[in-house]
Length: 503
Image (cartoon, rainbow, N blue to C red; front, side):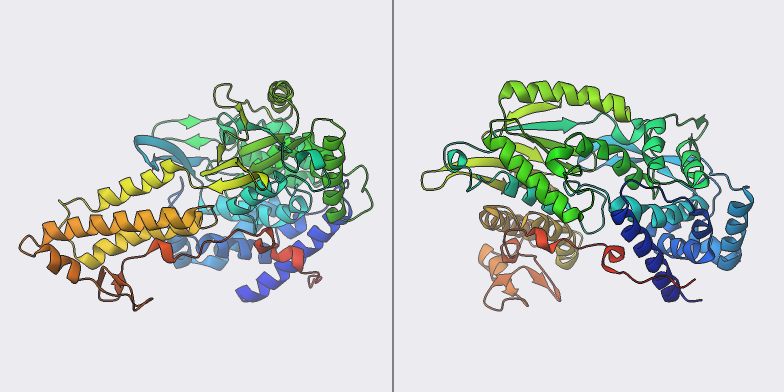
């Protein structure tokens, strides 16, 4: 059976689970083991693992995707299926490796590398669990979810912070959410309580074999160069299923504010979209009536809580939330990094700066901006890449390295207010750094000769840029700058398909 046939069959299974979960938010799916050990599900999970670059990295057993293919891919999967069905399968500990922290020279973070065998089983578990929990995750959660991203989280905050037309008092003179609780969880992925996590899973998964399998992954441990370390808390390091398990545990945050995120009590028999609308109405009515409203927005373990009340109410909620997280997830908020900030002062969230600015014509307006530190950091990276002691490489190779960081940076920040001005400043700086580098590379050339060596861009013939052959300088200010729209977020494939799987 080819991979495309497996993919269609698996999509049918996922669609069935998603539709059932959406229609039955309080029920358990009791028989999942047959699907989990089906060769088509395992084969689909294998293709996902094999297509990932990480497949070249071995776990504690030394096996890579290439070695498995050389021996027999089919035999590997049938043996794995037999071990799962007989109960002989046991997860191996993850191999711990330390990798450098991005932007922090000399600092390292631990990375767990599971075996290929464990990755395939975790992938199969994720295939079946994700549709069930995705149907119930709150719309204010954006991290590690199909079709959702950081830009969606920021745009949701911006829209929520807009003064409401129906509330005349907040249209100009007062923000609907004047305070923000900036949440910071200590070592989130390493400290999630296993007991609390499995209890949350059991509310939706009634198949004990699946729950036990997830529990065995949680307890599999980590193997360093000289010792085995037990994992009494946290999700599997480097595991495919870890982000999903973290979202299951951290959904307790949205659950605390259920009245203002998804009003289930008033919409038990209604569609999810109605629950979201009911929650929006509850926020408006409570705020207009003078009752304090708390609106969380979370991206994985990073979250903020918008507060409509006073500073005292925000501080009290910060303390109450810390106690609640310990009780429901075993996680601890950092007392130093978790703080309450005025919306007018601005907060940094997901690498962006979010703040409310006053305008004489329109009153307060929320903005998503590029933090100055992020632009300075990009300048520093470009400066390092164009150091004058690296003149041995060609201009084309230098442009390729510079473009690799500037193009992604521009695409990430293109939805910010004032991004165009920042892009123009950075283009000037990058062009100057490339000129200085070329001047060192070609010391006998005059400045006019160097500047004159620019060539017409292949993208815009009227603009001259640094270029060698087909490789040219990426111009940031040519990146379209616009406001992100929540409608651009994609639905997962299983949420759009309603086909039944073939048995």
